[in-house]
Amino acid sequence: MEQPGASSLPDAVRGHWADRWAPAGLRPYLRLARIERPIGWWLLLLPCWWSAALAAVASGQPYPDPLHCFLFLIGAVAMRGAGCTYNDIVDRDLDIRVERTRQRPLPSGQVSLKGALAFLGLQGLVGLLVLLQFNGFAIATGFGSLAVVALYPFMKRFFWMPQIVLGLAFSWGALMGWAAAFGSLSLAPVLLYLASIAWVVGYDTIYALQDIEDDEIAGIKSSARFFGERVKLGVGICYGLALVFMLAAFVQAGAGAATFVGIGLFALHLGRQVARIDRSDGAGALRLFRSNRDAGLILFAAMVADALF
Image (cartoon, rainbow, N blue to C red):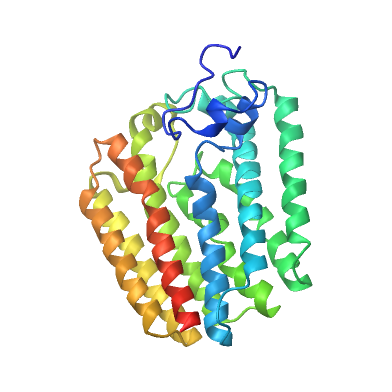
């Protein structure tokens, strides 16, 4: 039997298979990888898929490379899990001071530090095997993300906008799809990368609204605390920058009408999020945060349709 406090965390998907069907001894490790919170790997995956679709549009291919998209899916799940495991190893002393995180596997004692390190190595190996399936330039580009990933957990201790560093890491896929397709980079994927960074800062600011009170007590810095009462304005500026950089990327890549219809729908979705932000509603903030998966999929579908037609 699992020990007390080993149940799902407050922001986990209720009734997820990892909590219902996985062997009891494996469940803490799955929680360490945030398997029961799939929104994380979706948000890591979407810039990869956008980039692959943008490459298809630019090259005149009828669709993004299916193998590349599948590899990005496996890599996103593995590397998001590895990143979360690493983050929890670094933050294990902070997590015990925050209500939403104190029942995570490491601070609650469900997983030992040695076990977490071994699990981190296993997930990293899966990510490496995926990365090695691409061309040499894409492999080198992928390795370039590791420095940013390693830096992120420390930023919340002294930098008021750690979400920017998270954006640098979570948006790396915006470069990878293009690099995998062309074996090089150009202005279009760099602009898409900048757009994704701004998007990440926006949606993670919404996510951080859940922890404002505990973060103040623990001395953890976040963009939600930085924006304060002007959080709607702050998120709106981030989303606005994301749209501007996206438009520039799509023009640079020679995108067609379907992509621009998609970005219009994407913009409406982001605007709806901003309008519904309520600093006092943590549950609502989580719902808005999770809705970014749908926003990203709408944009990806439009780009695929553009390539096809």
